[in-house]
Length: 193
Image 1 (tube, rainbow, N blue to C red):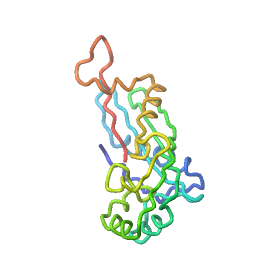
Image 2 (image 1 turned 180 degrees about the vertical axis):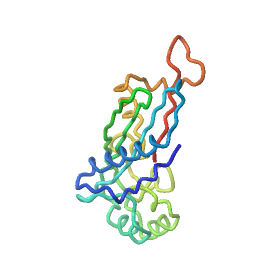
Image 3 (image 1 turned 45 degrees about the vertical axis):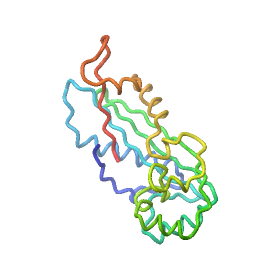
């Protein structure tokens, strides 16, 4: 995995879906410029970015601990919409496919003490919306309407559809090494974070 190094603060939009998709594009493009793929190897780059839409506000990563605490005080017992932009580039074929996955997240009615303890772990400072479901924040999410992998940051069903747009199947990513039955060798995806 290559980290894109994109300064997310430079991109501004009043629409969460447009913002996360533009950030995904920039991240994929930044990684693409640093690649030197072998001529005989199919190369894919995927850039992803997520933002939380809450009370009409777009929430990326919190600025600091107090910001994360304020967010959780507002979010607890309520719901937000997580948008995750995906930009998939087939370097070999010079093609791209992109889309946004959207999932509703219902937060638990956490206590002030739980919020403070969670924020002190540092985990919510590095993620959009100040929460995770695959880490320490998982118990603070009551339920999800939609694809859980969207909340993790890479929607697997959406990735499958984007690959299909580029003439690939998700199962092509499972085959490594020697192709079988004349199938093309598996492309190596390179996520841009």
